[in-house]
Length: 90
Image (cartoon, rainbow, N blue to C red; front, top):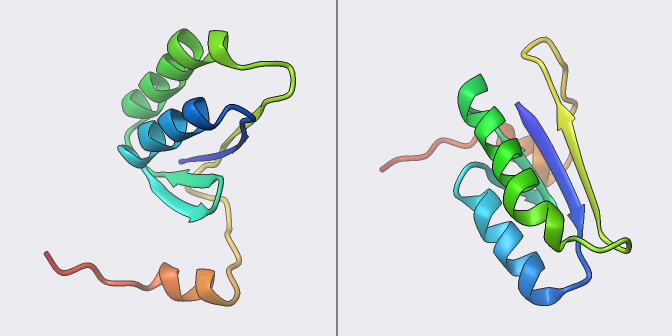
């Protein structure tokens, strides 16, 4: 699982980056995404960020990618706690 946090100054780039992340994961805060997928897909996401987005980032932008294992514990409170047990019916 990846936890991706970003602070991008350029509105157009920030929108493109968030739409890119929305394809793979769930927005858990305004600029934080949780991405659960196979190792191959997670590596592809990082590769695409590096190859496409990295050259567009400026020194004022900040992107953090946290690699979380299945053994990591996540403690949730408030709205985040409710999201943990949400059921999607399609």
